[in-house]
Length: 529
Image (cartoon, rainbow, N blue to C red):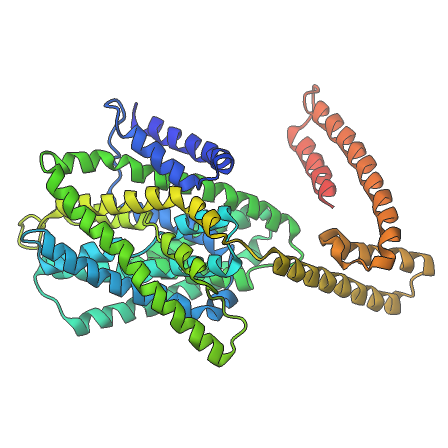
């Protein structure tokens, strides 16, 4: 098996792991990690040969962009307090605790190298957290916090990692220099991300074609990451800024085709890249085995100590942090902020702290040599410890999290979600009726046509959720709904017959496939209405 065949196996596994995970009640990223672990054992499976400095730029931009599409800037600002406590403060605390533990248990490990280890294992993986939370039906407030933590903690951790590596290879460290580097990295990233978001938004208007616009959205995250990185900014923060900018300002409400096609496209990209990323984590078992060699017992002991610290620190931090957030929430009365409301939800947040792609990439990106040409101190030990932390947190916590959620009875507030859905349905129907009233005043519509359009405006809200129908009108609505359902069925069969006829014409002599496809596209768009 060569590298290309291995990539194909991972891509197929990424697709298959989704329905298998749904059936087993397990997150697909965890299944892909297990697949990677299995593939790492046979001798005929090659070692992964990807330059470490290309892993983050190749995998993180599309994954982050896809994750941001599911959230909004308003959601981040509403949850800034819990996100700060997790994505910034907890990363610092975890890094310090791991560095202190590693320095104590690994003989001769320099402080800077220990700090680098702490930085690379500190951030929980945003992709794993989002995938797991989305499949388990957790309360939206927990999903929002986990998404915010996962998207922003990489910014802090990667910057701290680079500062620690620079100190290790050069032999010098400055606290003021580290703080300045962190601030400059954030400023550059936000500037680059906002600028590329603005330029991309203008290009969207110029392109005016769904295919080209979606293609641009695929290129923009990579451009944002690379440009910010070249300017010594945070590539992760730049991608987040660009994605949030486009989510807020780059959406045309009337561009239905681009929105539907873009959603499907990014679902495919997210599924494939996530599968490959977590499959690569499991495949790194090759490297871990080669690193440990005859020191398995000793190195597993070191790794076990670090794993314990990583998991325990998150729990010890979350308990008081959650209490503090709830106390501030009650004092300020901020009803928009999402916070855990019970110790059960806090426990679920604790057990959701899985490490993943970023930690692997940072571990493999540790330089081989110092500035003076000597080997980087204890590099193999650091990489092995990082791999054990990633596998234990991802596999152990990922496999047991569904059981824990069921055991604690933590689930989404479906009543609140339905109420909000009903509110949106009413607003949609009201907006349609108001626009119809404006058109009626401007064009003096016939009464019969006005009444027909008014019923359609009402049906618009009902199709979103039937709960908007009042009890006394339910029977009339159900009668009309049955009639509309019959009309849609008949219309669907008519359009199906039309599509079959057009597709048959594609194979006829002299038929122009391009013209056939254009006509078929019109029929497909008509079927969506």
